[in-house]
Image (cartoon, rainbow, N blue to C red; front, top):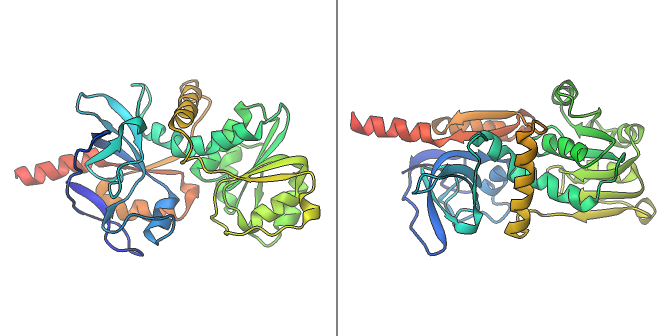
Length: 318
């Protein structure tokens, strides 16, 4: 089968033939229609986040068809088999039915990114009228987080990111009440002016998170879910008094919890309350898609695998 493969750590993915996944107890074979990529795919290719041993297929989620024709969303493929391939094997509990009126790209954008936003915000217990700051707001998860915070009752949502152009889009789309450009060397002052914040959903950690702690209100809760800006946080005890910082990982949560969050997100999407910018590519244009992953302000990156499969079949037939 065709697949996007990492042949060695530190390298970029290439399209090549790869053995089809074996059938195993407790798994189902899925014919992949579309595969979702995220920045963590790049980090794994560099040896971060415990990647499989090369060669392996990239991608951690997708939409496809079961043998009986049912269209499903899936995540957590068996080791070595991601989603950027024609066929993959997935644990049965990680295969979730998908409503016919929900497009594959939208389902993919709402799954890992969406549950990654919703679960920590639910744990933060957003109260009506509170101000929520999202650090790393221009990426897919950040875009969804701003909208989810509003659905949970936030009175004001503020997006922070590095790209002024991408931040302005959040205002134009009406999903942020205010934006703050960070990474300019003056994060403390910029966030202080925009605060105080009762809740911070932190997708980046590092220096921006340090500044956000200082801009939090008394009783403020920071939910940290990413490390794009650094692996360490240095704040004084005085700056933490009356505040809390929580490290949250959603991928290890029970399936029932993640699926309930996904179903809630799908319901909001069907009501027109959630959207995210998406960039789609056929599988053979993996190099372009991979390049975009380094700049999350472009939105969710999705590969259409079924198109590559048809082209491959046609070339063989000829």
